[in-house]
Length: 257
Image 1 (cartoon, helix red, strand yellow):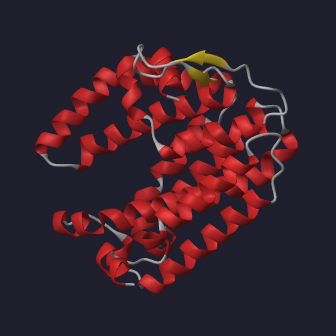
Image 2 (cartoon, rainbow, N blue to C red; image 1 turned 60 degrees about the horizontal axis):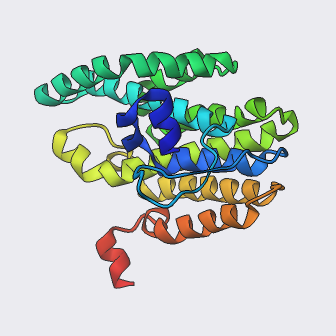
C-alpha cells in the first residue's frame, strides 16, 4: 500500500497507510480469481531485503485513491470545525494535498466509482447526528458500502457485489462507532457532538454487536481463491485487539477483567 501511495501521489503519501485501506486492498487481492503479478521490492528502506509486493493491483489502487480522498475530506472538515490554529493548518494542508486529491478523484471516476454520491452521503453526517444520533453511523456505513462493493466493479466480479456491500456497510458502521468511542472524552472537552453523550450506551452497543455479527458472518460466507487464512486471521486479531471497544469497556475497566 505505501509503495502505491508514494508512486501515485508522492512520497509524503506513504504516511497515510492505515489498517482499513490495507484491509480493502487485501480483500480485493484475495477475491481476485486472476493470480496477482507479484514482484520483489522493498517498501520504504531501499537497503532492506526485497519481499513480494503487488502495489499495482486494481484493489490496491482503489484503496489508495480512497485514502487520499478521505484525507481531503477530513482536511476540509477540520478547516471549518476546529480551532483557529488547526483551521489554518488544515487549510494549508488541503491546499498542498489538492493535486493528489484531484488525481485520486480522477482515478476513482475512471473506474465508474460513484464519487459524488459518496461525498453527498458523508455530507449528511451532521444532519444524522442532530436528528437521529443513534443512527449517526449511517453516512459512514453508506460510504464504506460503496467503497468496498466497488471492488466487484474493478475486479469484474458482479456476483460478489451484494456480499461486499453488506460487509462494507457493517465495516463503516464499526469504524464510525470506534472513532466516536475513542474521541468521546476529547469531544466532551471541546464541546463537540458525540453520540455517547446523548444516547443510551446499551443501544449503541446493540448496533455495534449487530454490525460486527453482519461483518463476520458475511466474510465467513465468502470464498477466497487465496489468502483465506490471512483474512480469517485479520478478523480474529481485530476481535482480540478491539475487544474493549466491541464491549464498550474503557481500558481501565478492561484491565480489571
